[in-house]
Image (cartoon, rainbow, N blue to C red; front, top):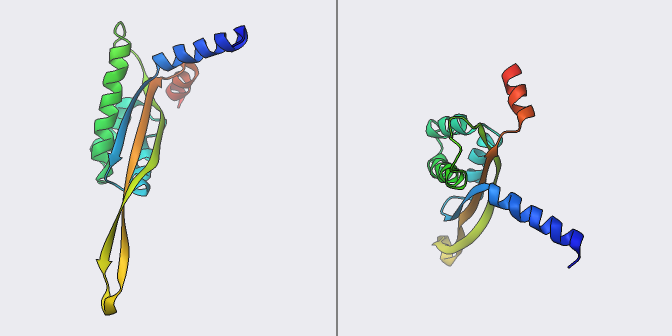
Length: 141
């Protein structure tokens, strides 16, 4: 590998170590229902996102709140010298991917059968510091 590629790879590796993330696998909720809640908290400051998830009526918000708390704990573990209260964190990325699908059969009239697809999903959430520019914009608004 060339020197330039090696340096770029090291930089990417160092950036990945700074990112705090949490992954929820095989959640037994359809990806469509989970995306509704995920879109609600994308790009939002962490404390505000926790409040939104706490008081949401959606069932997916319970699992997403627990996952967000895990991502915050992972951030605290990676940044031992910093305090959460002093550092403005936000939900940088959150994405929901489809997971395995359980296929079941529902009996139907006249000897037929309908296929039931029980969907599940994978959720990945990335928490990171808010950039200085974004903090100033939020204060001005």
